[in-house]
Length: 289
Image (cartoon, rainbow, N blue to C red; front, side, top):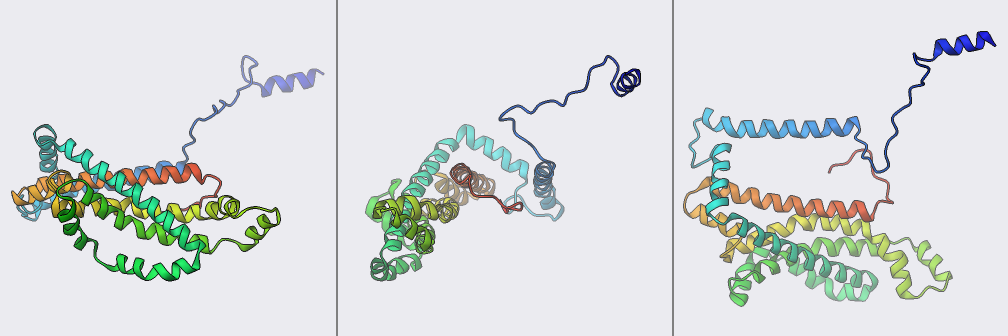
């Protein structure tokens, strides 16, 4: 007994208290070493890019009206923020992007489901949908301005046209490639046509739908910008044209950065929704985004 107690006394720390690992609280985010390295590398790339933007134009003797320094762009952004109504234009463009993206996504989803469930409808409508996609969207912008005037509606319509096709194609392909064994299994349980769609076909199309939404989130910004460039009196596209007409290169960069921020926010919202609703799908250890 004495030898056992002495051995225990030697193995225990002073005070007789055993060290306890700190418990991980429920819901506490776990940050891995790989994530830290990834974020640090991304920040380092951004710092290098901004440093090159700031000093390289001067080293190469490039004039400010061709490529302004980063600090010049920041100063112009502050000026446009305080005196140029930048945020008003920013939110108008953001609203047009959100509405155009949402309507284009709903239209693409609906048409994709209809064409996927009806081969006859696909055979009849696909040539016209393809012709609409092949036609350059920039050519429609002046027409929409003539019809609807200098309002938000032409920009939203151009965004709808651009967003529609990739989402429609992704949903159509997903509906057509649903596992027939799963459909037959549900049919053996006396499921109706609506139940087959709701329980098998639509859930199977969600991964492809979100892939199309990722593409559409960025294309919506392109569509709205095209509409504002052609016939806008508000929005970041209008600011871009106005700055270009004044020879204000820094102002052009400010408008481009604002459009980029809107596109990143839209893409991030789609990614967040995808991870929330498709959490049951295992993610690859290596991802592009």
